[in-house]
Image (cartoon, rainbow, N blue to C red; front, side, top):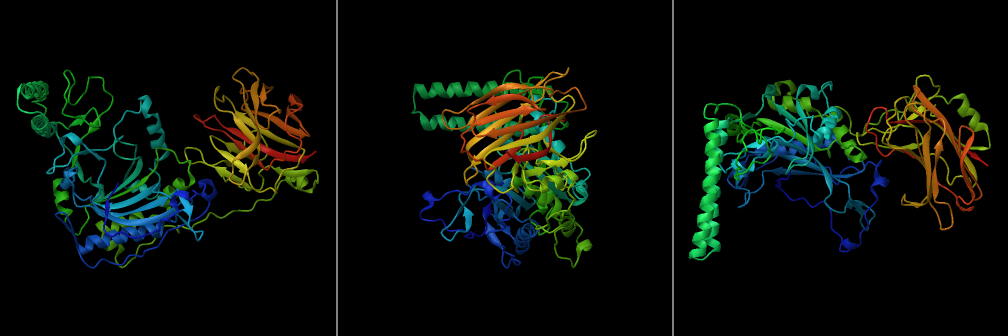
Amino acid sequence: MRRIIFTLIAVFIVSASFSQAVVVPRETLADSTLGWIKVYNFPPATKPVLRDDRTYSVRQLSICNEFANWIQASYMPKGSLGDVKKAALDKLTPYNQIKKALPQSYGAYALSYISLKRNQQGRLEPYDATSFNWSIYANGEIGDYVDVICTPEQYYFYIPGENESENMQSDGYLADARKLFDYSRHPVLKNYIYYYQPKGIRTSPMFVVLLCKDNKLPYVQITKGEYLDQLAGAIERKYGNDIEEVKKNWEEGKTRDKVLLETADKHLQVVAIFNENKEKYKNRLQEKATVYTEQPNEFLSEGVDLFEGTGNSSYKYPIYKYDPAKAALTKTDQPQWIVISWDLEGSNLSEPYLKHMHESIISNFNFDYVYNYFFYPEKVKGQSYKPLRSPLFKEEVVAVEASVAAKKAIADNSVYFFDDFSTTGIGKKPTGWNSKLNDKGIPVIVTTLNGETGNWLEIKGNSVLLSSVKKPLPKNFTLSFDVAVPENFTWGAKSLKINLSRQKPDGTDEASVILSIKPGYSGGTDGSAYVETKLPAGYSSGGSFVAPGFSVNKKINRISVAIKKNGEQLEIWIDKNKVAEYSKGVPDDLVFNALSFSMIRSDGETEKYFVSNIKITKN
């Protein structure tokens, strides 16, 4: 959430030639630990700050500094460039007067900039404000405010996605995210209140950890009676504003009188609908208020229940307010609750910098220390903050002996490249390959298959690019590999793509041959394949053909594939059967320098490919 910064700190100089600056491709920085623009090590504050009618004490400002320091001690931006800022509630304007009713909040937040450029000295700096954020606020805002009933005297809110039905089609993505971010077995998070919050009308998707003493929530659900009282006031305010607008925009006379009469009639209609609802619930005013839409308004519709909608509404949004007793205490130096939240872009963790930030927080940040520091200080008396794990932590790579087949391939001069993944530990990313993430943040990993020997790549909505081999590839070669799918692989799921390309320095393909292959359906039917190319005019554009024997009726369905290039001729073989031939397939002088295996998307557990025994032989 946005906050006003206490002290503006200049973190980079905008070049006079900014319009000519070139953004550094993000993929080239994905594995680079870029760190912070500056590590501040903020000391304790020395004097209070007055903003609007609020005074932020020396202790409150010191807490902001501590939050900023704890963030930088726990997270080292990777694939992004970090900065940290201190903040408090937005400064009041004529357009945000409801913020006046908020509890006193203050904290710090980190920005991980992902759109970067190089300055004249060659150093990276933000190109624009595009970033992922991580924030920590004492007495921070929760959820999003309910516009219609909020006033400068009382603030009401709901939590996006809190009680949405997972049976609704639109909530399938939310259900996946909740499953992905289930930390009920996490050694630390399981002890606290946490939830994944999807995108709301005014809020971005985020993960939220709420630290409250003894896990007692700092907010309460309001009653139907309170909601009705507040809505009645909103209806009258709306009518008063409408009357003022008419008087402001129309001169005295018949036209104004007509518009005033129409405005009064609409108001009476709304009041009548409101009174019907109030009569309906007159004996249920102490029930908790749950409405059917994220943002109800004053424009009440006939036949629409204020709490139930049309009767078949599937959404239920509890309406909350901050506990008045706790809210009053937020002006003291003791925080009443701590809101720790960070951007997650739905359940999409395919971007390495976002996954790195998320994993750094849940693995490194010392939630227990922060909780005890504020709510049970005797437990950490005399102790300074330390992250659970260094932000520069790197998992140790365990060397595994190569298989007999791999050793034999190394000794064969005709073999340009071979990998059966025998030197990579099970469950690890393949050594010598750049592994990209799927939308759950899962990379291509090495695994084993029941009934099959050796190690295999598991490709499930992600991809790998060969990085360890010297380039370019041989002018004439045979690329062979084994590919398998599990039983009942979904018919219509995405193909496995094998991309042989000549890449430019920026990573884009200037020429390519892509083989796409997928299995058939139940009953032992053959699979299908097609070739598509990006080549000069006059050369083959590819075509479709059958992939014999590639079905889904066995526990593991395995075939061997080979792509052969000799001069201009291109051939595709499956299990020693030539299935496609292009006499003018590729230019004779085209030399490839990149090889990748990918699957665009996976929507089910059986939708995955296994690949092994990848060999490039010089022809």
